Length: 621
Picture (spheres, rainbow, N blue to C red):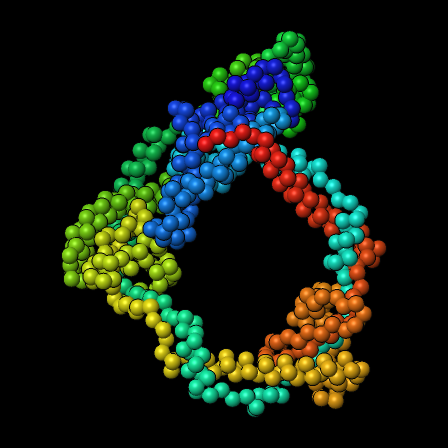
């Protein structure tokens, strides 16, 4: 696939694609398998393209890390590798199938777009600026090389382009809008008669026998989960660092070392004009040189001549140069330029470039006073890390097989802390950490009463805990929940009696009396509304929701009684339904609804296309 794209570049066969591969040595199309599956160790083949074991392993590892970070028990089936592989492999196959169909359709990604996406990711920034070391470290932690990560970014862009193209083909018919408006803007007439709970309050009693019977029949409702609290001691680099004094001389010495090591660096914002190899390339290069010499604007020439269709619309802009992304000859040409200068023709595998440095910023060494706080903190942390290693070993030795934590705490100058009670799957404070909860509920700690092993919360923080108290799972005693049961049973009995009264009122209205007449004769409040919308602000929100969920009748009043907030009962009567009309909407409302429908139709188009595309691709496992 990489070769296919290279061939397309050299033949200038461009279908919404730009020259990408040779500039950043990353495909602007599908091709990650060629980089990820060096040994041909594929777990699936999709349209002739492989899903590598490396890709699958990386995706499984990332998903497992996400689950563990969200507090999933590491011993549960959810995080077992085999189960994760079974879930994730079909997702990778689906993605690969979409990429295969995208490549066949000529969908690609622009060099500037890939570059801009990577440089714009906040995770790779330090002090608001892209940091190459942070970039390489983070993608390395995720299992990527720079080349494979760029491919992944390009693939994401391709899939996004594909979805955008499909979304652009969606449309909305007048019939769809009319049908939706008829429902959304429907109006309903109704009344609501409120029967106060006090009407039957004195007539309802709950006996001890009823409470006992409910308690026995619904034991699980009163289950109290197992909980434990712990004593613990903890060490951390941050706390140790606070105790470390740093001499001014040490800070100055470190600053002087920084001065000696400092190499002035520059940040280049660049643009280029690419002339791809071809029969007319020589004449185009000459034309560009002539017009540059005549003072023609670089941006204008880029829009006219550049074969990098992704950057030429923005005057050839490639953003900030990141070392190692472009070919060496390209980068060396940049370094030889000052701000505003344009290079002589530079040849790479992608073609011939004219490069302009649109901005050059020189990074200077900060002053001693500016650097002093950070240097002091760095020295403290560096020394604290050494102390931390020693303290970690002491903590391990002092707490192993010890009968408590006090001896270790005294010798290490720590304080024994206490946690509140927490459950196996939920806790606050230190118990937010799944590692802490797992240790607290382990057999050694919970049943044998031993200290836990040292728990490494992070690379710079660790702790040891032991059981303080343990409350097994149990059913709450009847005396603790009897008042709760009584209130529940009483409320149920009140609602049952109120429902009977509502049925009686319904019968009177059905017999010919007006709702208002019946309500006033009983001293109940009545609310009457004529043709209101579902979001009407004059009607009670609970009544309105219930009324718009009721089925429309065929001329006769439709009744329903509901429990209202506060324990009252409301008899609702739906008397009329009027469909919404497009002509009653403003232009802005019609436009907003059309946009919403278009978005939904686009999603359906995308889903249908993806299913059809995937069904046509041959998949082998």
